[in-house]
Length: 171
Image (cartoon, rainbow, N blue to C red; front, side):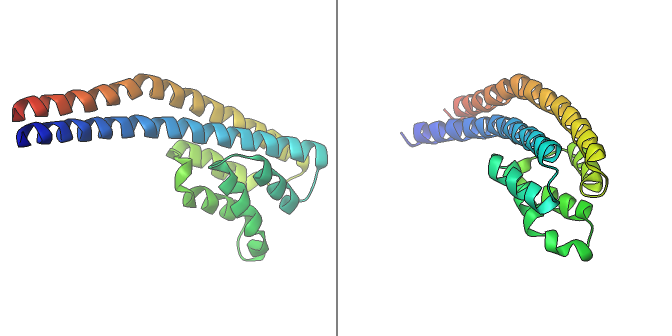
């Protein structure tokens, strides 16, 4: 009876690891979606309102879903530090500090590049940079969706299969 309980726990644990890995792929897709949507909102706000950066960050944070909301809220909260550091540094720090964003190095580099343009150039240049960033992140989102579709099943199957194999060995 004890062996059976151990085998079931082992199978459930291994399946849980596989499902957790597949879930992380899903969270990455969700994160990239919210980031793309947030940047699109920022672009629209900039194009139509031509407001100052604090108002842009505030309005975008209010309209964006988590985890991307943190990026805009963080920037809004730290705009008082603009004399001590650049907006690009604040933007990059916000992207680094939010663990829920689950960004790859390529995506962080694209965001950092955008941070160097925001608030520095005229509105048309900022809108163009936002468009380029959104396009690049959409490509990353498509890759993440494909990875989730392909590897999600693999991780789940490996977790369940390895747990079952270990359970068989124990019995």
